[in-house]
Image: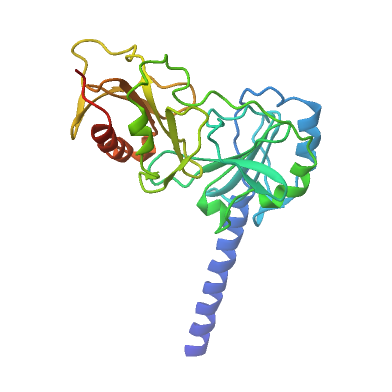
Length: 298
């Protein structure tokens, strides 16, 4: 009776394991839902051929079916409902692609990583910035399974697309009207090399503009000597951070999470573009430099 009981227990365990495998295999075969997105070349013949040439496996995930009606220019791979990689062909480059972007070269293709700004999210999208049509690949940490990116397995088929130089989008703060820059020299010479821990300063074409970048995130940008903020009105709420009163213009441009902060009460107005992901760290650090290296309003 003991041996019979042990045998039945072993059979039960095996049955549970087999059933679990069947369940997860079926979950992995579940079609992926992808809605249509506008794009200049999503319905192009180039994208149709590109989608047909994609591999059957990516990052260990099998090519998945797409829920009908299938949008043009899409593909997906999955192993379960939480491990999923999606691809779109023929899309626009993201708003984050500007002169301050820091693309990385992977197997001869330039990719721009854009991380989700939602706290604790590991979702990221990688865009080709030197190919036409533009390809976007989206995955999170679970789907990447420890890989640095979700695109290396696509190197062959992506590198076969024609190369193209794309015009960057306007940089943050570049559209602001100019103001008095005569008092900006000392500030620009004494700005920090890093802000908000992971942002590092990069060179800019305008001597009165400074930018700091972090991989996959929108830049922090400071511009000294701008016109007074258009959306500021008497009685508007100001944020006092150490010695600087700030006006936050929360009118966001299309596709960005950054808001523009204006340092007031100085001899000239100073604007800072701050992504939501940085919290107030950049405002605090740059405010200290502004207070130390620009005169107060007379």
